[in-house]
Length: 58
Image (cartoon, rainbow, N blue to C red; front, side):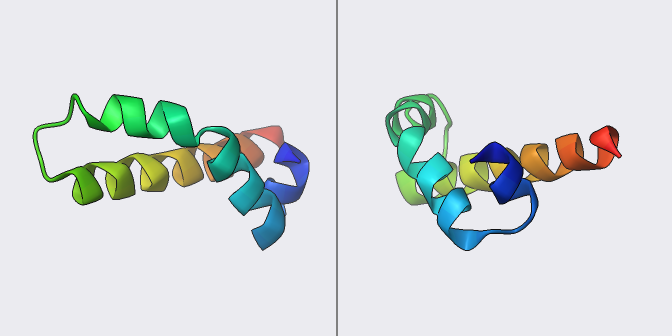
């Protein structure tokens, strides 16, 4: 699934986000901004981390 997400497979990305949904929501409580903004920031960082790891693997 991670490999497919690195290849920009939207279904794999959604599956990963769903898999980590609870963790994302839990961590968002510790960010001092509105909940929606915190969740968005975490998701963005998560997606950037996936892409960064892909570039390191090349």
